[in-house]
Length: 300
Image (cartoon, rainbow, N blue to C red; front, side, top):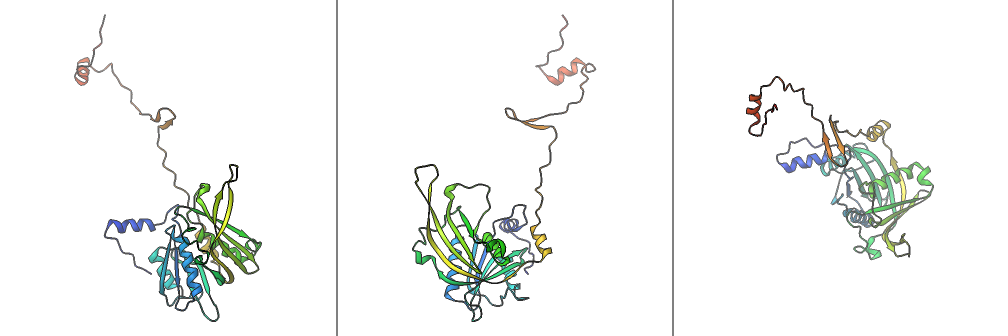
């Protein structure tokens, strides 16, 4: 674990404020990395995932080989937690390749920079973005949102597929918003479950004229396209899950007394004035305090 060091500049203080806990958390950043032994398929998947997440600015990709990372073994996640704290990433995708587990990907999430849950999949029949010829033409635009489609009963019944669905949603949805313009939906991720396999496709959305107010939608396959086989998964403990799912109450602003708002006058406030005993005050003193504009009482 990294030691706590007090920053010496304003930039350092701003970085610490960004990483501090908030009622509305920041968008989850993803760390993409691979182990000592890998394959061209795994490298291609990590590169394409980085291209899809690069538009949001919430992805970090390591190209060097990383040793001593074994997420499913005890003690093998310590270096991964160190990188999570260093880069402030709450999700990761780890790629590896071996004779026993070929073209292997491990998706995981972090809570407080500690390992939360894991799921392992194998990649089959991978087709990169370059094969579709639309790397720049169909690239995600900054500020756009994807449409996520999950087809199949396995996503509602099988624990492994339900777990994979949760992680894919966190990985691909981007920033959470209350409303979005129809033109901001420029891509769709389609996942079809069949047994323990998941067919993953990425399509670009194009809005065409239909003669009505509702446009006609066309889906153009833009890649990547792959088949994922679910292998191992590790769910979090119940106590850790309750702690991570706990939602803090939104802090309400303190009520200001004697202040109200009017549609015409705007902000209106009341001021308490104590009782003024004007009869006991001499006219001369009042004239001196008020000045030339003071007019004494005229007896006619």
